[in-house]
Amino acid sequence: MNREWLRSEIEKYHTPYKEEEKYKGRFLDLLFFDNCFERSLLSGHITASAWVLTSDFNQVALLHHKKLDRWLQPGGHADGDENVKRVALKELQEETGITDVSLIGDSFFDIDIHSIPQRKDVPEHDHYDIRFAFIANKPEQLKKNEESNEVAWIAIDELEQHVGNDTSVLRMKEKTLKL
Image 1 (spheres, helix red, strand yellow):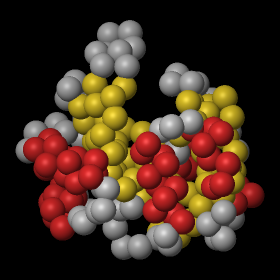
Image 2: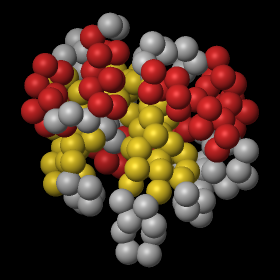
Image 3: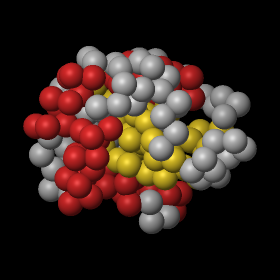
Image 4: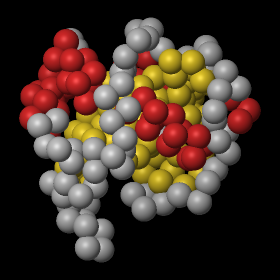
């Protein structure tokens, strides 16, 4: 997996969600920047995350992010790594302790562009997030790290109580219910 793989996958990605369809062009434009996988591209950069489910698809692993004060799926910056699946797996392991997973499907599960507020000397910018869906083969591996207030298995039917109206997370819930 590299930049060209990602470009190809985004070009052929079909989604019934209008917001994702709009994101495709922005992702493809971003991929022309040499440093799009680096935080040094201050307007926005590629990130990757993991939507991790129990084998029955009834629960998802989420963390309550300290800096953002929100429940989110594990994920983070590519920091130069063009293999976004590897980035998602690295972030998953660092943020939840989960290492034994199986990919659902043969590509990414969802794409999203969301704004990150200004923090210290880093201006507000966009995260162009590539999201992979996984099944946790050993859900008992779940544990919190220092970046989170909490990490937990959240029941899919109770997701709104944790994420409110976060449309991107709720979109992944809808997709999960169709698996």
